[in-house]
Amino acid sequence: MSISKSNGGLQYDGDSATEGEERPLLRNKEEHKTYKRRWYVLAVFSSACFIQAAVWNTWGPITQSAEVAFGWKDSQIGMLANWGNIAYIITVFPACYFMDTKGLRVSFVACTVLMLIGTGVRCITLEPQYATWLMNLCAILNGIAGTVPFAGPALIANTWFPPNQRTTATAILSIFNYGGVAMAFVIGPQLVSSPKYRNETHIENNTYRDSRLSLGLEEIVHCSKNISNSSQVLINFESVRHDIRYLMYYECAVAGLIFICSIFVPSKPPTPPSVSASTERVEYKGALINIARNRAVWLIGLAYALPAGVYGVWGAVIDVILKPVGIAQTEVGWIGFYSIMAGCVSGLAIGRFSDLFMRHMKFFLLVMFALAAGSFVWFTLLCVKVIPFSTVFTELCEYHPHTVEEEKRWNIPHCPMGGDDASR
Image (cartoon, rainbow, N blue to C red):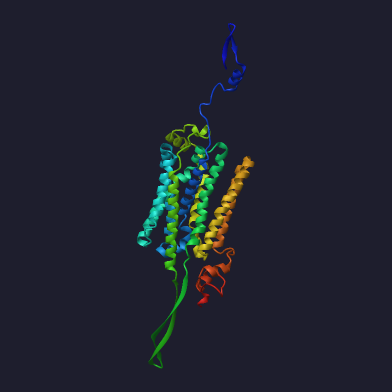
């Protein structure tokens, strides 16, 4: 607005006054903006979630191959998955504090470094006496590295995404985490050969002396008896170890690529995407105390942790569980893959129904828990042969070389064209 003197008075310029009225009297102290690079951050972080979960689930899908390659027992396979969970529980709270104090970028890079080191030490040697220690070390380091991929999705969504995109960003990160577990069930058995056996029969001729009395005289009889011993011999030991070595190389290479990409991830955008993203957080220690005193939080946490934890570790050793039943390693991998993907799809569907019928959330949860319990009962009855086993027997013949004793023990019909019958 311009002012000029005319005939001893003040004259105002109308156009300038209009422009002034259109300007806000109080400017926003802080502007909010979204950046395209947020999708790069989401992609790198999702990839880290994927490979961390895949490394955690490396050994479960290839249990049969790992046990013959390293001489491991089922308990050692279970501990390789369990070390990651133990390491996560111990380090998750310090990791969250580190994210709050040092920022997201530093924490994320540190976790990718741990993943790279963990997958790298597995490539040093496959000699059983050393490899066992290195595999356990990798499991611990990978468990520590999982603190940011597990605890960080909400922080990523809040820091980089506007409110109307945060649910989508969080869902993408969660799906990639479960996707890593699911793909490990496919990639492992496809890259690593299943153990293949050949039946060998050894016939021994034993001669022994039979002494008996006949008509008051000692009669010495020399008898000859053929004893047949049947055993299974592993015929692809070197191939199994070779495949495992390259699986270690592939996972290490992916972890290295993610580490390089994480270096270029910014800690936060120059301008926050929303008001809540720029709001100062509650003091960490005080927040933990408030959570510890909140009974509802404990109940919600237990309601999620108990079923999710039991199912998670059960899935990691499903090959160990189904091995005595006679199911091939490749088929177990597909079972694990389909179960994880079914959980992801049904979770999205139930989540959508819960949004539409918010007052019936408890009903949906009870129905899902009941279905889960029924599924585990059904699975148990299948394994103990109470109800007919559903696996196609021709697949058992093709993939699992069983003996006559195994056929009798597990009620497997005789397969004239597969398994060990080729040699019988």
